[in-house]
Image (tube, rainbow, N blue to C red; front, side, top):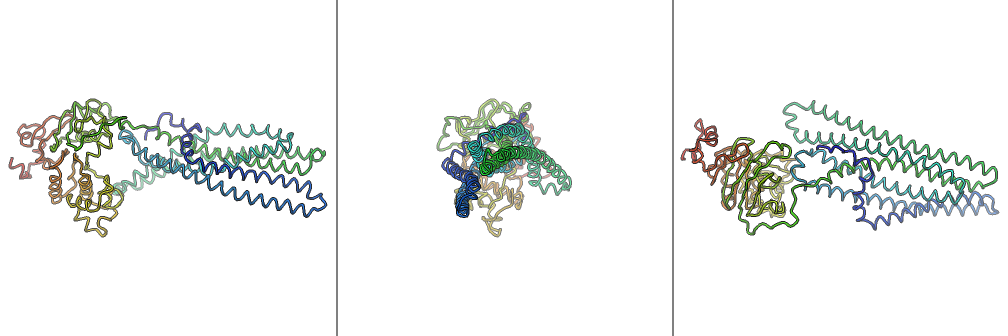
Length: 600
């Protein structure tokens, strides 16, 4: 997928994480409970130094030293128990909230991808989109779950420790507070570098994923051409690039963590040395110094942990930026604000009015030019012509995968731009030249688009598509699971399932794009008879290279270079001696003239 020129821009700011906020708001109750547990855990932790001070200053010097020490240690056990319970509660709530938020994000991202239009997918790499849907959201889940838990805990600890340090010794606290900006500034300054390197690592991983998905999807072609070694080499290079980018990102995060921890604990050592001088001079007690040191260690440890979490959150911001790019893409083919309902019952009338169109990737070449035609309800119209003539583009425009550059298209008198795409496509049934079969059961493949259809109708559709015989011969019949993309089926079997799918949909307009091209002669006769049976009651557009399959069409449109150059019946077009007649001579010579042609 082509990257925006400023692809790194979202990764340079933590604002890229803001889209997660609305998802988190859905679970305000659980967040408040997590914050409550966090407050209790932090409070329990900050109580420990008070017990230590009391034990040092009073336990060892009181008349009942044993009793005092036992009391302070018993109190610490209670505090630790409270700490353990509150920490477990906080961890469970924060982690599950993170899992829930990212699960919601994944679902919305996938839903968004399903709504994007054909121009987006003309340039997109599916493997990279899958990487964003999986790897990038996993990166965000880690940051929003475990990292968020650690960040909240240490933030509370840091603020609490600083407050208690000020209460314990304002003088020593002042020295610590002076050191904090020296520690924090490098964190903030290095965040941009960490985010940029993390973004680069995710991009390289996406490249490797896209390459793997593309080649594994065509593994038979790879093996047939003996390209395994070359493919492995290229994937290894892609993986190595991903590793190097990840290593660079990790190196930046490691340096950041080391600097933060050193500065934090070095400041504690310096303050401890100064405090020891005050104890020797009798200005503070040993217990008070111990209390202060513990709070200082808590604060330094929390700050060190925050530095590591900052790196992880910066990395998550890079992933969030990549996801934000997709979510920012808006489809151009959308339902109008006030869609017009198509007439009921449907008539099946199709009209093209002076339509011209160029694909976005080839804006300088018109795929269709000044196309005007009307297909009456129930009429069967065949579209023929050489490759690249614009035949398939007619189907693409009719299904509103694209909008025409100029002109308009209407179904049953309603402009397609005024109709909700889902309503329009509900009235069209497509049998493509290269049918898509999913890695599901045969019954589910036939039901695709009609998920609630009972098995009886599925079987009936398979019988009408001449698919029932090979389906029932399988061990599990209609429950047989076919491989990904129907790899365990022959081309003819896949095409018959696609025809059965269209039959089951029972739409008023039938679109056949070389629907029998993968069938042998015997099955072609059977399927053609089935198609003729269902074509009687609906409008049918047929794209065909094999002219023998369109001889019974009410009209034949001959296209060349995006325009209709001839129109008529088979006999009329042969008599004209034009492009169609030349195509007919090429296909029907050498004694291979069908009976229907010979009779004309």
